[in-house]
Amino acid sequence: MVPGTDYSASSIGPRISPAALFWIFFRIACTSFGGFMAMIAVVENVVVERKKLLTHQDMLDGISLAQILPGPVAVNVCTYVGYRLRGGAGALVAAAAAILPAFVLIVLLSAAYFRFGQTPAVNRLFTGFVPAVTAVIVAAAWNMSRRALTGARERVIAAVAAGALLGIGGFYSTLAIIFGAAAIGWLWFRHSANGAPGSAASKPPPRAPLNASLLWFATAPLTSIPLWSLEPGLLLKLFSVFAGMSLVLFGGGYVFIPMIQEIVVNHQHWVTVQEFVDGIALGQITPGPILVSAAFIGFKVAGLAGATVATLGIFAPPALLMVAGTHVFERLQHSAAVRAALRGVRPAVIGMIFAAAVVVGKTSAPVWMSALVFGAALLALVRFRVEAVWVIPAAGLLGVWLYP
Image 1: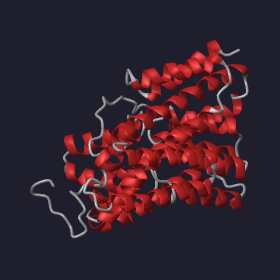
Image 2 (image 1 turned 180 degrees about the vertical axis):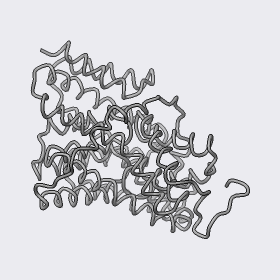
Image 3 (image 1 turned 60 degrees about the horizontal axis):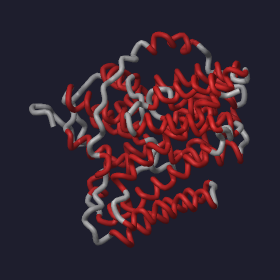
């Protein structure tokens, strides 16, 4: 902790004004391209290294808790930091600021997509996105597997999880995989001391921040659009569906892909398979969490009000759990049973991410150009460490040129 700072009994960190807290996380969100680990890395750099508002151990505790609880890991970490600095109000401010830039941009892109998305040039653009998004998911799973699949048992869990999700599919299969892997982890690893929570995420990879803060000034007129609700019942349904999914989301945004597709495409019929994949692609090229793609679906269903309600549904319940979980984290952190269960869940999550890549890849155009775009994108991501924010737009432009 910071020397000479007065801490309250609730372990809230040094005092900082809500406006300053909002500005810190708003700027972080504007520069956090490249997935949840990129956002966590920027948070640690700003909050710990530069401003020294929390210690490294505080951040490690928050990352560990974010992995245990459901919801988007990066936004959960921002919620944790905000809570430590300003209590419940700080958690709300930090989470809102972390989501706002991506939300504004995805709404603007959604409006453009549903107005111009059926033109031939735009169709070819999004046709090029699909294999690149598949490559991004494969690269994420590969990078995680090198650190988490350290033994034969972990590899077996990952393979079974991927096979179950691809062979059976569906929302309940996702739940069964998560809780089944936790039970297997408890059985196999409860006598091991190597299951410490958060070990895979204790050192987020450093990255150079991008200066994208001017994005807000370019999109500020959007705030003048009224949030009129034409169908309160439909908005309530949107919120309940996304809120329900958010409470069973473990392992980050990529695991969410097969679950949300099953519900919003096959059950609710709110978007088509192609629109769903295009929404995921748009979420990839915006800063911040990939789960902001929920706003794309909400926009299709009920305009700006739908986008707002869907975003609240997917982010608010996990943030509330994150605040509540902070009170009991010390007990969870030292529980051998929780450590063992997490050691089983992590490889299952990796297997599910590989399965998600297959689900998305099946929507690619069945031509050689798709394989070329996928291979080039995967090489750029894995070999040359190019960020997804550059790979996906480049793939779209390549699609305009390659696809007939």
